Length: 198
Image 1: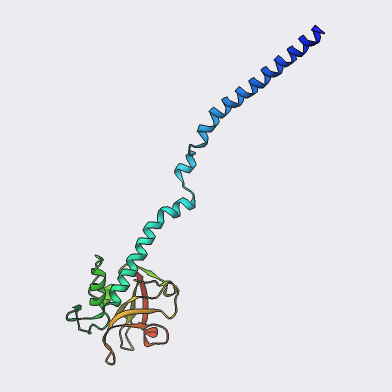
Image 2: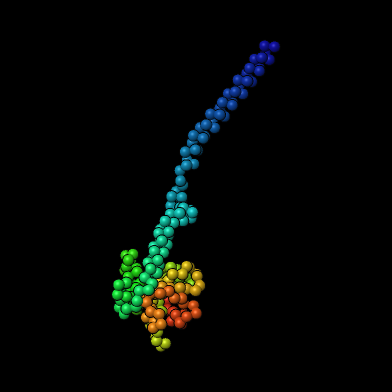
């Protein structure tokens, strides 16, 4: 009877010792592994994933869109201002490049007072990708003209048809700052290029 109890006691002692050793081993492993799980790897430091990159760029993109909307709203607020050759002020009137100069200048964006030079500002974009605040440039009214002669500011959203723009027109029938469209008008034949400034 005593041997059986001692045998049982020895078995319990070694069983408990084994359990404690496993438990202490697990604690030690956790102490080594857990701190390393929260540290970024070298590859994540060098190249953030696309979701992080997109979130980082979001404020800048939102700021550019808000600026473009402000330029369009300011340009549209000039509607009804009369046309004046070489004009750059709502008090005396605008010509087409003077209107663009004045509108963008209000937001600190320098523009030339020359339609011929407006075709060199910013970068060209496809007409189908025009978006608000882009500059749209047309040939002159002379049917033989192939050089820039008129310009306006795009007010349509990206890919929107008809492509609409606000401009200072010298048209006899309805001159001054107004909104026109490219498709289905004489501007379609005269279209030269869309330029992105922002």
